[in-house]
Image: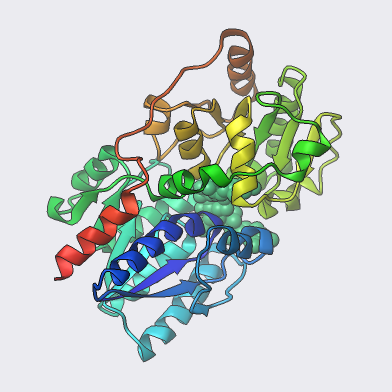
Length: 363
Ligand code: UD1
Ligand code: UDP
């Protein structure tokens, strides 16, 4: 069995790492399973790409399309053209895509049109918000997928509601947590830890990158102002995503306690997450990591495709309004936070489940 594994953006790298490990281990056991790793080049800065390959021991990609940045359509189209050209010369049996970025949808469409079966890892999650490019990517990808691997029962149910045949849906848990569990003992403090003499629970960790929060100067400024003014005197550490940096550079923000730094590597970022008093974010993956590590998390969005991080985990979905962010920060500092539990099958074994299922379906 030959599988193309597609990865393009930061969260993709974290998701494919354990899948490649699981494939390699099956191959070592004598199974006929091969993969070709394709990097689309959607993310390309060292600290958004190569750094993750090095830290998570991901093999060098067999190909890199180097599509770079662009509008939604131009980036998606560039990935589609590159992948279509590749499939003209060599077609795999299966194309495995993860998550919900443009690379995910682009390659799913091309594979399906070339009669290559599509595997979607992290299928079925839905925010219900079609203003998010990711929601469109999820819906289109899942409309073409052959094998659906889900992180939660809710995601499986979403697919069933959309008319997907139940026998093609496999609830396997969360590959992001496979990576988290595997590397937790290797987390290491970033430079900012010593520079600011940070201590456990003595700082706020902030990340923002959703277009709706960071593309407009007033939205980003309001979030930063609110966080800095309501963080109970604690330092706010803000690793800045490149999309966000473009807007931040236009703003005149000056808080003594705000420390903006470049995006961090996985091991350093998750060290900061693990010991933060609270993480304030609009990321999807980070809400899953805080849930597993039991760290309070405030999500500055109006919807989430990961409801279990709120109903089971330590996340609160607070919306984007300043008063709401302030309310939840006050709650954290004055009343404390919910404990949270780890969702079912977020146990570090999801990639192995996926590869076992693929092998048993193919043989
Ligand atoms: C993308 C995904 C989003 C995911 C996020 C993870 C889509 C539609 N969006 O958003 O779902 O949560 O990745 O981080 O696929 N840039 C750089 N260097 C890089 C990459 C990007 O400078 O290595 C800058 C460019 O100016 C680019 C902008 O960031 O235009 C946005 O990058 P893009 O990949 O289009 O979307 P993200 O916001 O990163
Ligand atoms: N992450 C990282 N360094 C950072 C910010 C995030 O390693 O400076 C990791 C984080 O631990 C998680 C993933 O990147 O595993 C989340 O990616 P992102 O927030 O960019 O995307 P999303 O999950 O929202 O699609």
